[in-house]
Image (tube, one colour):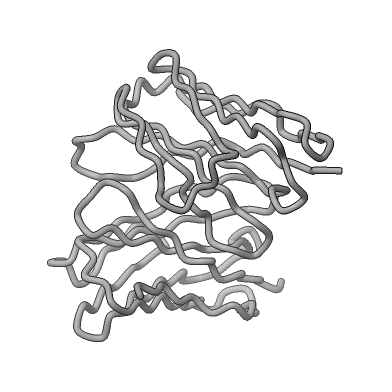
Length: 111
Length: 114
């Protein structure tokens, strides 16, 4: 069956460091992959989208990579700040407009 | 600002008592989705509307229904809530076809069932 795996353990890092979150998938051939941020008790907010023919995408302090051979996407936040603390969800779509979400990984940035 | 608005933010209902959650959007998007999210779990798609066309997920219980009277509004009806239906309910929109198929979410309605 299709699976999207995100680390269920929280990632704790020090302010100023680079945070790297992982999204692995199996039995899937996504046409594109999205990353969302979700704060406690709120709806997810779109951050970045990367397509299967793109290796890397950047937006300000954010960078996403997409390796369809490894079936993995990495999400990086450089120069992390306590305000970056949240849960980050990846979502995959096979070409339809409907994404399937992972459970997310909690990021905690310590001052 | 254009946005997706969900009401209420918190809803408490009794076991078996019907409840309706509402969602409105000012984005004029043609697709509206309802997701259910339980604590520390992935949002799970219940159903979505593509324009007026209703699309139900195969594993969405019959207890859950939806209405979309016009482009701006969408409702989630839970006919007989059980304890297992306590969750955050997220409404989202997207504009298809569009270059980027991102979803715009509301703040969610946290449903408690007593």
